Amino acid sequence: MRIPDIMKSRMSVSFEVFPPKADKPLDPLMRILDKLYTMQPDFISVTYGAGGSNAGRHMEICKSIADSGKTMPLSHFTCIGSNKDDIRRQMDRCLELGIDNILALRGDIPQGWEGTRGDFTHASELIAFLREEYGDKFVIGMAGAPEKHIEAKTFAEDIAHLRMKQDAGADFITTQLCYDVEGFKWWMDTIRKTGVTIPIDVGIMPVLNKNSIIKMCLSMNGCSIPQPLAELISRHYNDSDEDFRKYGIEYTTNMVYEFMALGINGVHFYSLNKAEAVLEICRNCGLAYRK
Ligand code: FAD
Figure 1: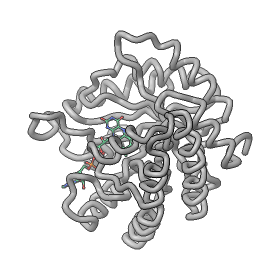
Figure 2: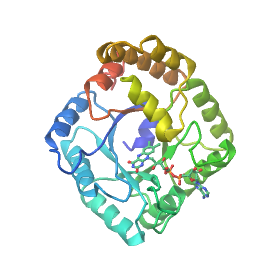
Figure 3: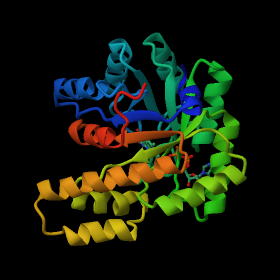
């Protein structure tokens, strides 16, 4: 079944991994993938370095997921630094390797650049191009920012751009990390009212380490740390990393339940290339062996 059809029929469960640096071996990630497969995920996504810095490894990992026969790969792709021919080459290669799910992104503009230095300025243009060139050969996912993309001045503006991506041909939304479940609910209700009807897959960044959480929310994403999470961090600020992780897993488990209660269409765990914590959260939430 295709990803949006799964999400329309029941809540999907999926993971994200990232390619290791070029000088690091791939084997550890392959062992992590083997562990993630035990949860029977609907798909596993593989991140893409803006400008294609890790394109070779990225493709190798996607192919290995496709070849495993255990689940489908979702290949992230950004249009930073790419012209139409570059994109065609990458997409043709994907199809040759049996990769037909693309998360179509603009990517973060590297520091010091003005614009994308490619043929497209925004993800909506990339999505429209993929649809025009490839018809229904690809399932196309798009990014959504429940707390507003950092560059957008207003929610209204960002949501209008989200709608443009759907209208350009995207099949589902995967969201940026978000700990503010109330805020997420407002965003979900609002985008539905503006005619965004495609499935919403919530990006879940597990709470495992207090410093990483603070950095991830504040360094580039502009995501809030809601009061209950701030309280958890304060209460356990001086705990060992191991103890904090235990409370964080409990916190994340409850947060996933809250998202599930909103009727979301999928949960997408940012695994950070570690299997144990996300598998524990999935088991806690009753997501194991659900098929
Ligand atoms: P866009 O949809 O183009 O939006 C970017 C900004 O432009 C927004 O503020 C939007 O409101 C505005 N905008 C959009 N269309 C228009 C328009 N027509 N006119 C004016 N303004 C407009 N980055 C990576 O480099 N590699 C990855 O693998 C990766 N994976 C990601 C996975 C997920 C689930 C998410 C949520 C993000 C991921 N990112 C990744 C980060 C992403 O590339 C950045 O958030 C990037 O800054 C924006 O990408 P986008 O696709 O949302 O861009």
